[in-house]
Image 1 (cartoon, rainbow, N blue to C red):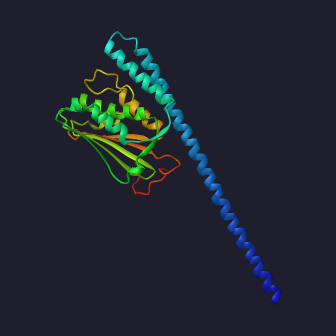
Image 2: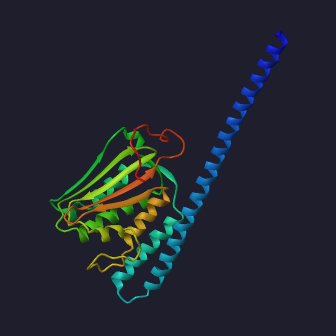
Image 3: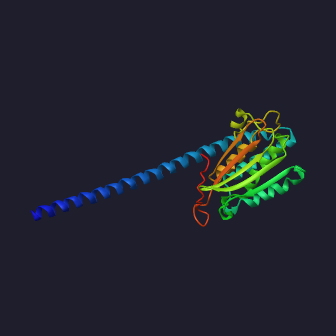
Length: 252
């Protein structure tokens, strides 16, 4: 009887060990599959982004030959920025710097209207890795759109806050706002607003820049309710800014 009990216990222990090993193997396999799926998704997203950029660049190059000198300068600017976004610089910097520079550059244009910047959370989280000049251009382009299309506006508010995995940079105006159809096309290339003289590419380039940081851009609006641009940009993968334990969730 003693030997039978010993054998039973040994067999039970062996089964338990086998189950533990099987569970570990299953979890490792699932993690590996998740990594592969994420990698494939990133590759597909990069492919989509580069394809959009190549198509838009081709169209801009075709249009640069137009006789309108002012339009030609604008098209060349968009081309140059979009080309840079295809091969951006990579360095860590606080988002407050380029935002403050844009606000200062628009003071004369704004006159007595308000241009505001604010931060929330621990300021050390508010750094990103990417091309500083491109982010400055993106914020300035949103300001240009407000000045050109959002009358009667009285305020532009820029806010940076830490969210799970990144930074949420929002630019909000209190101008005329957009209907649902126009809002859905804000970041689409060659979709100018009604009455606009431009090619309707500027905010597409803004989205492309944010995506070059590994982020996402979305716009929300309603007639008479202004426009809210939400730019989510991830934190650096490593270093002191690699994780933000804020409990906030990044936009989908």
